[in-house]
Image (cartoon, rainbow, N blue to C red; front, top):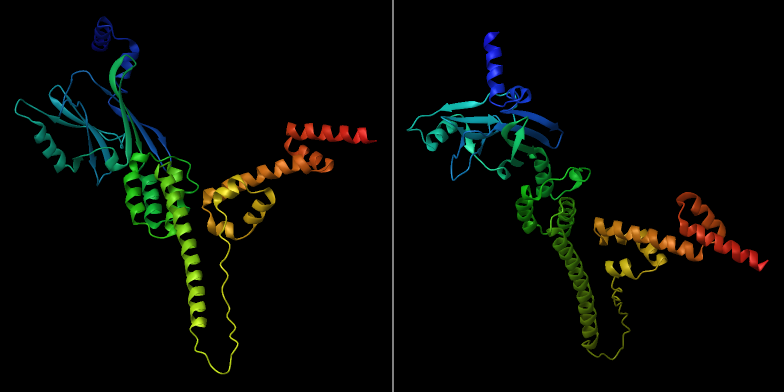
Length: 351
């Protein structure tokens, strides 16, 4: 008991508060902040007093054990190298005692023997942030780590199979730097329009800049197909006409019925329906099966929103008093109220 009191008295003399003394049992440990199906969030406070540079001026390095799926951080303090586990909070730190002859390469060999290899965060699908902070009076390295491995695997499968169905309902965002290189590789391999459309959905969800370029490529391919169909029709008509002209003359004149395919009117573009089409024209287009085949998922939804806006404008402009009152009961839009009052005033004046 006397030893404990003397120890406490020693800390107080050196300017340490009671919080600092209690915090000694909380630092140099990993804590689980959040554990969800898609992202795991870890936090650690490591004491930074007496830390020495390990390599190239860095005072900490990351290591990963594939077998144990253990992401760890290595620091060099006084005469010890200490490896703290970030993914396994209950695991004890691995300590390597050193002497004057010990070098960093010797520690790397020992770590390799234990299954640990030097790594970076992007290689194992995680994001880390390290800052200098005081934790209850103790100078520490504040480390925040988010593990995105499961989420990355789901997006990789969607990209590899060109099928966005499995990730449509996911709301958690995957950082771009963890998936952009993989996405670009499969974007170059995409050949069909269906594959490009699925990649566009994935790119939009990930907010990748390539989403716009894919959309342009899809529209370009559609225009190429339509132009090709027109050329085929023209060529067929030309060949038929040539065949009729070259028919040898005979005494008996035969009447030949030639059925020529009329080229279809070119389909109006997405931008026409977005900017210039009337409500009736847009409604007719979206109600037909052509819209589903011609448009991407995002384009179809955009035109649906425009149809709703045009419907409201038409109702405000041409709707009867009864229709406006019924609509106002549902949406409480002040524009409808103003229109109703104006029509009621006109009706009163006409009496």
